[in-house]
Image 1: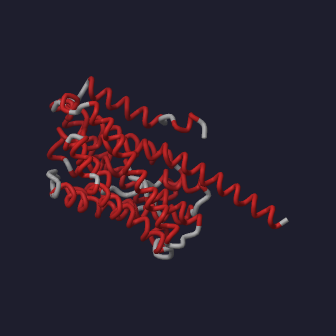
Image 2: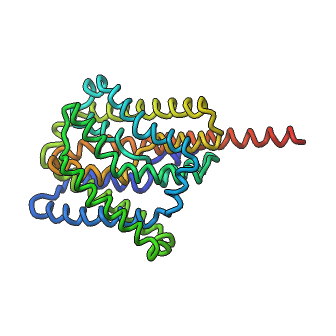
Image 3: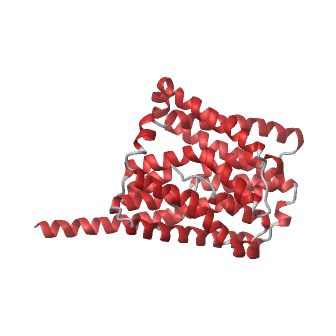
Length: 333
């Protein structure tokens, strides 16, 4: 594993630059309202394109390997929230209230798609199952994540606008469904222009991060967030990721999954989507933009951490697979 693979990618550097820009030159007043309108349109376009990208057969095939998908679902939407609640004493002791609520928000999010598939492929896992599992996780997450967020935050002193659940339907689910319906006409174009979707993904996230941190900086984010709390957020995120990956790996082996299926379960069941999470946060917490910057900080930290850790784990899986293949060849000879 080279050091280069552990360094932040260009998008992470762009995120950090956006946070710095918002800290130094936050948008205010009428400019902020214009940015909000642009961001809402970008979010709707993002989910429209995601709907157009998802093949119908990916949804249908989700039924055929139900044990694997159910295991990923349980990790994403049951294990993560339970661990988030279990870490409450540490969260309250080490983090600010907004940062801990941000950790709970991370626990309610769906899995990633692109990186889950990429790491499963690198490790030699069941790529078709990863495609279906990650895609279905995001589809279900559009509806389930707002409900989980409401339950988790309402019971721990946080709050979200329940009107935001309706906004999720209008701004995320409706464009997603329309995009999926339109796939028969634009699916080929979307498949041929995948960089367009990636650009929309990243551009939308950067817009939301800029507007969120601008509002948070105006409200005094950096004055109210100690450096120690940021370091503790990193440590708590690392602990959360380590617990999930350990438990999911153990469960996959206890349930008798093959090595290829185990890899898909580990990488799909241990990740959280920033592409879905930040737009959702923008809608769900629309009434408290002053706190949105702190709420999405844990997600940004967890996102980079999961990429670095999974890169190492994927390479180790691949090396063990190569060793096992070599042993099989020697025995065959």
